[in-house]
Amino acid sequence: MQLVNWSGAIFGPGSEWLWSFAQFVVVVVTLLGIYRQLRAQGATNALQRIDTLQGRWQSPTMTYAKLEFALAMRDRGSKPVPFRTYVPIIEFFAELAALEQEGYASIDEVSGNSGLPLQIWTALGEPALEALRAENMRPELYSDVETLVERVREQFRRQGARPVTTDADTIRRSLDFVIETSTDELRREYAIRAGTLPPIPTAEVVA
Image 1 (tube, helix red, strand yellow):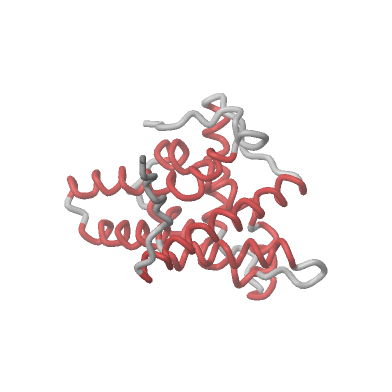
Image 2 (cartoon, one colour):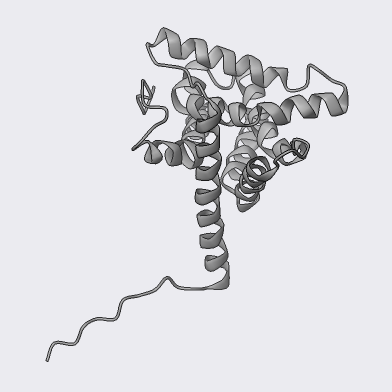
């Protein structure tokens, strides 16, 4: 079941809500759907993996990883690609790819509910992945994620939706958006941990 129709609405003015939804919510929708199926099947090991994966995507640690990666990519200039900051993100999608390969998630579920963030994050991280492969001398590294991306893109085409395409300007705006939203999420998390209340307006006294 596809909860959101992504067709033709990937980037551009007014798409900020879509980006935010893709970044922080959509992947978890897929995980919750898989969780319900696995609970019915009694697949204990897979359930534990889903719990771990869901918690990881929503965690401050992952939010920090997104922020660190986006800042490094935006500000690197002529410096080498900061591939190590991309590892937590690509590892997340590698685990999602493994769950799909092992039959715990269908390609319809992954495409319908996580297809957009999967395509966006792998597009943003493409230079980092190439540098990571070169560093480790393993050109096949994370090829399972690339395979999943291609299958998702093909699924988009079959459904009449447009796969994500990116250019330099889109990448720049996307990184800026990740920085803004991740910073806001971390500030909120730190405020909660510190017990800091948001500003509460003082009620006006009517004479």
